[in-house]
Length: 89
Image (tube, rainbow, N blue to C red; front, top):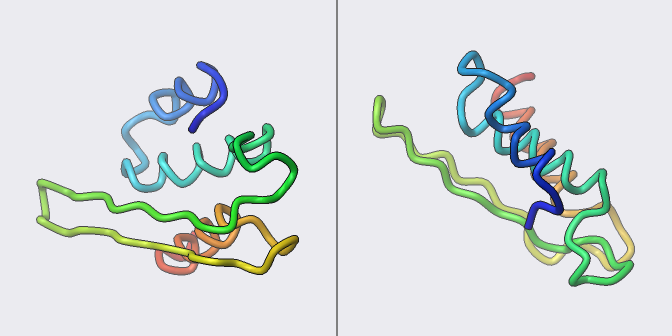
């Protein structure tokens, strides 16, 4: 859940040079950095996942992080790291 319009508009502001998957992970990370999902109170999110379909190539990018250690790194941080390693950003 993105906390405000600034983050949502960030997806569009990145332009078409980046894939939607790149824009999505960057926006998820920005959301985490601005306070993240407040349903978890002060606990960092322990699971995160997404699937993105590309109609141009029929490729599906699926990444997931489940059940991270309580009090450990937030799942979105780990998801973004997986994505960056995959695409070598």
